[in-house]
Length: 344
Ligand code: TXA
Ligand code: MG
Image (tube, rainbow, N blue to C red; front, side):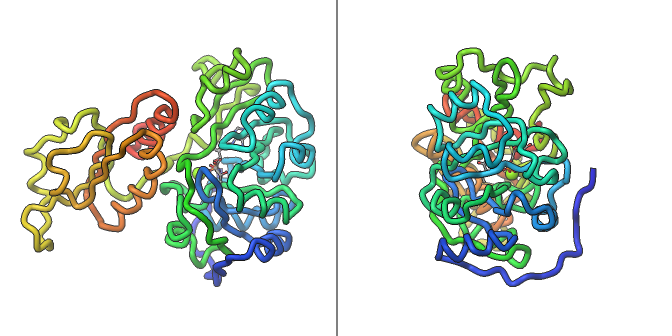
């Protein structure tokens, strides 16, 4: 496995507001970041191997981690996949456009770099209006990983994309804030039963409402070719610079641990170089450098990555995250929390 690293040629990253201009650049083989409802994506023509190679370099992404390919409408799947399966057709009809990726047999024109040499490909139809208009205008399948430096938290705002990728990509479509805030649900639809590979806003229960046999990855399947796990999940993901500690109750944040985090620079007395986010307010919240309490788990998920990034901008030493429950998007948020903490 090759991990691309420095040095990297500095580029002038253009900031765009025009969808036709962004589409033109993508058709010319350029790297263009764009908004989606899950997180920002870094787009590239999925048929153009030289361009895809540049994308891996720009992100510093390991070459064994395949990319998801995006199209404007469910009818466009024949440009990406060789065949449609019964389960994928059912999922697309019921849940797409939306935060869902179905894995299907790969179309021969999709660059082998996109799929990291696999014979399968992830297909996604985003619901975000700007993303759909862009894909419609490009008229070509667009491979797009999340638009962040590899290993870092994903980006839900265009400003966060620039923070990571300014000077490394050709352009950025300055779009809306991502509404969902966590990456799409990935489900492998190539085998006899669909297998959930990555949790997202669409839950296992949502998938089972469409295809009841849908299951999660079982330990016995790991490593067997037809049930290849989402390969990217082997690598570290979503990690801020600060240490992340997961708690169920704020009382787990041991007060004797806190004094050494006291800020010297602050004019306010007793500000901890720490951040706290959760669904339950922390009684000492105001003494943390950064704190956020969310009314719903959906809101927690939507602001999760930006919270991690804000904490890093403030250079806090530790980020305390209250664990999400398992219901709905809570399952996906919990997965990302554990990865941010380096626990998976
Ligand atoms: O919401 C999303 O999916 C965002 C937006 C931009 O669409 N994209 C995204 O891409 O999260 P990325 O590259 O950060 O994550 C892609 C995930 C990885 O875990 C990768 O291993 C998995 O999808 N994946 C892609 N192709 C696959 C395949 N053929 N088989 C199994 N897993 C695949
Ligand atoms: Mg990613």
